[in-house]
Image (cartoon, rainbow, N blue to C red; front, side, top):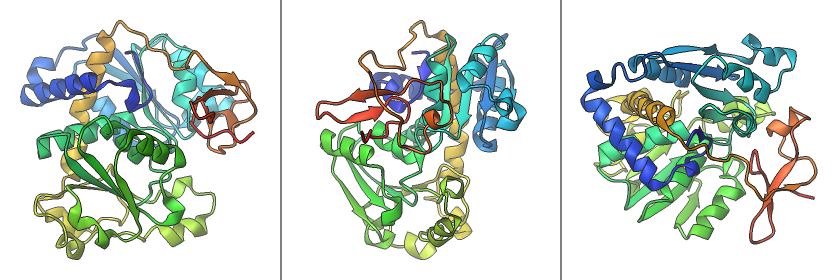
Length: 355
């Protein structure tokens, strides 16, 4: 496995192996301090994200490797109109592995399809964020001692929250998982995620009030309402303060529930919650470095180059998702996959095709 676009690119066995390696690195970091001597990680961040970028860079430096890259599209040839695939093709000449973040959904797929070196999707619009998911899984594994038989509450922006989409898909690999989805109607999870839960037979319920469901959760995963994903800023301002976790709400929760958040937070978790022993979000951020160290090591050693474009695709019309990479790059073929129900979804962003 040399391309990681989605958590679904990893089998449960591969996830378990990555988490076990991360555990070993946490227990004995000195043993891994020179594992990447002579190797270079390129961080191609077309969208600002100090936290994720620094986590990747810290991970590579802790392994003894080096880092190069850019932190915004304006600092790359994208500002001149270069495609993401061409940028990746050039950068693979200078680096051994690439971590890429882009505001357009499906950008990582478009780039990975054209290169040979390992590529890690560090977030593509509101679509996928697999390394955050691995961070989340490591956090749950270490703090709850298991990845099965859990009730997971996800609260806030479930429409644009790529961390939510990725975590749901990853946790559907494990037994005894139940989801509670807390959001306003405007920010409910996308249809394709809901359809996957229904098809897989995983129980879930959707509610609008956090207080109505917090008492049944083993994990509460808070998310911020992402202003950068809204075309209408008035709509963003109306929804951003809908859910604020405070000490009063925490009194309704189980004594061993843990609170997670991909960070950065705005005001959806009051600072008074930071002192609650159930607050796990800063521990979660620290675990991210170790899981990225494990992933970098694993991908550099991998001999298998997995396909990112399925074999059976159809060429149809333009994708109607305004955030899809195909809306930005006209040269990309409009490729779709068709499921057993005849529904076609964009290869890049998974948006349903409305022909």
